[in-house]
Amino acid sequence: MEDKLLIGGQELESRLFIGTGKFSSHEIIPKVIAASGSQVITMAIRRVNFFNEQDNVLNYIDKKCILLPNTSGARNAEEAVRIARIAREAGCGNWVKIEVITDNKYLLPDNYETIRATEILVKEGFVVLPYMSPDLMAAKRLEEVGAAAVMPLGAPIGTNRGLMTRELIRILIAESKLPVIVDAGIGRPSQAAEAMEMGAAAVLVNTAIATAQDPVQTARAFCLAVRAGRMAFLSGPGAVQEYAVASSPLTGFLHKQGGE
Amino acid sequence: MQIRVNGNLEEAAPALSIKEYLTEKGLRPESVVVELNGQVVKREEWGKILLKENDELEVLRFVGGG
Image 1: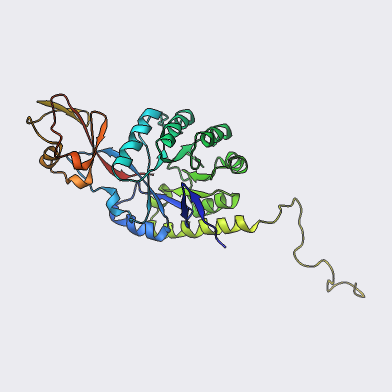
Image 2: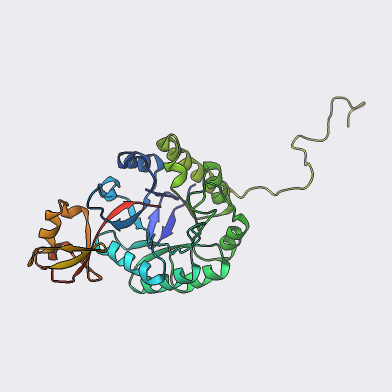
C-alpha cells in the first residue's frame, strides 16, 4: 500500500533522496544508490583543479536516476541562478536544489535569497527544490513563487543530529501544500522513519550514509526505514495517552472469587 | 595573450579554441563544463570559439555533494 510521490510531474517510487558527497571513493556510489533504491541523487559543481583532476561524479550515477544538482557555494540568489543554469546546460536536466548559504558555522540557509532564486528559476522552467530553514512564512512564499517542494533542515548539514527542528517541520507539514522533504541533519534510519511517520513526503540523506562504516548497508537501512515510516504514516497511528490503557481484558482475572 | 581561468591569470597561445585549450590541459572534454565570460558554452561550440585576450574562462565539473 505504498503510494507514489509526485514532484515536478515525475512519479517517484522511492521517498529517499541521497547525496553523493563525502564518500571515500566514487566507486562505492553506484552500490550505495542501488542499495538505497533512491531515484533522486544530488551532486555539486566546482572548478576543475588542473593539478589534481578527478573523475566526474555523474559517471557513477545510474542513468535512470533524476539528477538534482545543488547550488552549494552560492552566497546569494544570483550565484544560485548561475549555478543552476550551468547545471542545466551541462545536461543535468531541469531539477535543481537551491542552496544559498553565507553562515559558515552552521551552514544555515538564507531563506530570503532562496525565495528570490526560486522565483527566477521557476520562470525559466526549472523544477526547484529549495533547501530552507523551517519557517512557515518562507514556505508559503516558496509555494507562491512556484517551488516544487520545500526542503527544511532537520539539523545543521553533516551533524547527524536528527530532527532538532521537529516542531517547526510538523507545522510545515500541516500547513504547506508543498511536499516537505526533510534535508540535512538526519543521522540515523530511525530519524528518517520518524520524519516519514510525521508525514514528510521524503527525506534527503548524505552524511549519515557516506560516513557510516558500511555505507552500502546503511543505505539499505535508510531505504527500509523510509518505507516503514511512510507506511506507518499512511496507516494512521493510534492516539497517545497520558495514563495506562490495558491491552489485555480487565475482566476474568484468575484470582477473583465466584467469577464475574 | 593573457586569459583568466578559474580565477587565475594565464598565458595562452593566440587563436586557441576552447577545445584545444582543454586538450592541452589534459582534460577529457566530456568530463567538464565550460563558462566563457559568464555564459555557458555548449560542448558543440568548443571547437569553433577562439579564446581572446582578457577572456574569463571557468572550467567546471560535477563533484559529490549533498
